[in-house]
Amino acid sequence: MDIRNKANRIRLFSLKTPQMRAFHLSWFAFHICFFGWFGIAPLMAVVRDDLGLTKTQIGNTIIASVAITVIVRLAIGVLCDKIGPRKAYTWLLCLGSLPVMLIGLADSFESFFLARLAIGAIGASFVITQYHTSVMFGPNVVGTANATTAGWGNLGGGTTQIVMPLIFAAVMMLGVEETLGWRLAMVVPGIVLFLTGIAYYHFTQDAPDGNFSELRERGELPRSEREYSMRSTFGAAARDVRVWALFVVYAACFGVELTINNIAAIYFFDNFELDLATAGLIAGLFGLMNLFARTLGGVFSDLFARNGGLKGRVRWLFIAMFFEGIALMGFAQMETLAVAIGIMLVFSLFTQMAEGATFGVVPFINKKALGAVAGIVGAGGNAGAVAAGFLFRAETLTYQQGLLYLGMAVMVAAFFTFLVRFSPQVLAEEDAAYRAAADGEAAPGALSLR
Image (cartoon, rainbow, N blue to C red):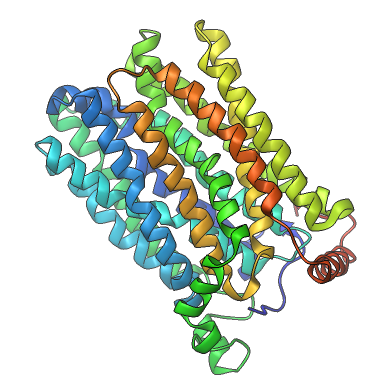
């Protein structure tokens, strides 16, 4: 897919260009999706008592919340290739708001399980976010753009842990019982999701020069048929071993983050005997690292590319993954609250940098099947969360043991980066493209405050 007029600089405080409108609305939409997706997680201690859920049942709902996203992410990537990210995001946000608001009708494990399963679909928003910034920004800043929008979106995982208990408390101040309070609290993110979907439709466009439908009419973009059809692009991505290597890598970084988002509050609540608000605040610190950590992963990816090309990007991805595994195993051994929080922040830093580094590589795997590649790799994150979920549903396995085994798995996954290789021709072409894009800017990969 040959998209022209990509931005070679990120001007943070500008909304004048379609590139920057897509940048800001995509991260904001993804951020809001976390309130719907994981809004119930910091309230699980209340839900557990209300619905009488066992640890196994809670584990099953955690798996449900991320399992369906695997399938939806696979589909949403090729859908972006066909109808464009603008329409794809609008439909996902508006339709996804419905189960978020309706989860309050759950009165049993079964109905609560189905609601979390349906809500999980909005997790596919990540793929659209990465797709939209990939087609809007040039090779010298695409790693930074992808990492920043995803990171500020993932930041929703942290703010959700903090804000949702406050919304719950505000509802309780109206004089309602806890059993009704958590249900009413979930209506708030549902309404915001719907309104964000409407805003996305009206204030963004698919590419720098217009929407995909307009570009195809003008002959500036191939029609979605033959080698550019949904079936062909997905097939091309699915046959590439590098895509599946990144699938495993992303399973071991974003999959781990999703798992922590689901269990952190109840982990600190139970293990350190904290109240719900304090446990949620500490759990939120993990996600709040996304304010800068994932961006750092993308910035370093772009900087490694300046001297090492695409090989440099892959080299940096391995480093981030390896240290993520070490930090996670250290976190699993902590018994003191203060030390556990400190190690958790180090672990969070490397986890999110690895995520940014992953999508610093994705745009260069297959440009004709960008959506399919992003969809498959993005689905890996949720597949990893599903696999990790089984570690935390067993009654015989403690959370600490599960975290230790998860850290070991991350270290193994780091070595899958060695399967991501590029031909000499592609290496030379991308190096030339990077130089050409960077020539116009003194600081490749830098964020501009203008």
